[in-house]
Image (tube, rainbow, N blue to C red; front, side):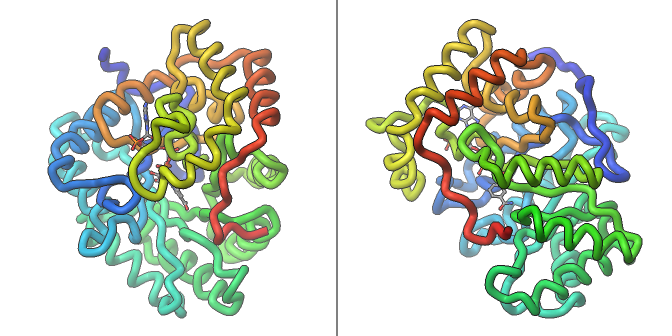
Length: 336
Ligand SMILES: NC(=O)c1ccc[n+]([C@@H]2O[C@H](COP(=O)([O-])OP(=O)(O)OC[C@H]3O[C@@H](n4cnc5c(N)ncnc54)[C@H](OP(=O)(O)O)[C@@H]3O)[C@@H](O)[C@H]2O)c1
């Protein structure tokens, strides 16, 4: 694949400049859902290098990524890959790691979030984290804890541990509240991450997008490929192993109109289905962070950049998505 070194359409995100698409690293260390094995590490490093060499500078991770004894593995791998990156220093310096801090029930004070931030920084062995994000809000089940989360973001920003702050799984109402709280303390909220894809485009997502636009917050769309269902490679008789298989079994049979449209547009444009599904997220004004496990997937997903779906293709996809009766289940922590 030709090295293009940066794509047109880089995006301002608070004080940062990021590529119009990032890569997600939930799978890097997760055995239960994603079948991770340490033997995959050299391929993941190639994925990382390929992405960076082709202009991707945003990588999403979390302090809770990695199952069991592999907890923190995604952050560790990202840190190692940054250190071992052989390309220009200038390019390495522009890499933005967006990590997320889990609202564990024992993290009850802002100081504990600062500690969590320092622990992530140590795992990655980097001086400063790009974006420190709250992984989820506790407003649904433990409202008093919420203030510790918000003050934690303020403290990590003021201490210079993070360049910018963001949230994840915040709904429209809670997003406005935290934005105003942070603003009053001089802390700009640069990003909001929600599940956003052709399988997850309800009224809430559209409302969040409008709020983000009005408050100058960037919307990061997670699971843009519907955990793999929007790649076209899975069918009701060809399911992935593990818990994803159970979920896909319920959803895939209702996705026919959508997958037919995706395939039709992909063939017409000489693109692939994942490229069309990711491009749809970009055309909706969001920054998708598809999860990638192999060099082949990374190469293919890089091909989602550098072109745009037409307005009639977008309409066709919106319509097909509405015609497909099944939707992704929403994150249990997603607030109103
Ligand atoms: N904030 C949150 O609560 C939250 C929640 C979920 C995700 N996220 C973030 O968002 C990122 C992306 O979401 P996701 O990983 O859940 O799902 P996704 O991006 O919708 O799907 C990713 C999976 O699809 C498959 N895939 C990717 N590209 C492909 C291609 N070109 N061809 C065929 N298969 C392909 C791979 O799995 P297989 O090869 O195994 O099929 C890959 O792991 C995560 O990595 C994470 O950083 C955040």
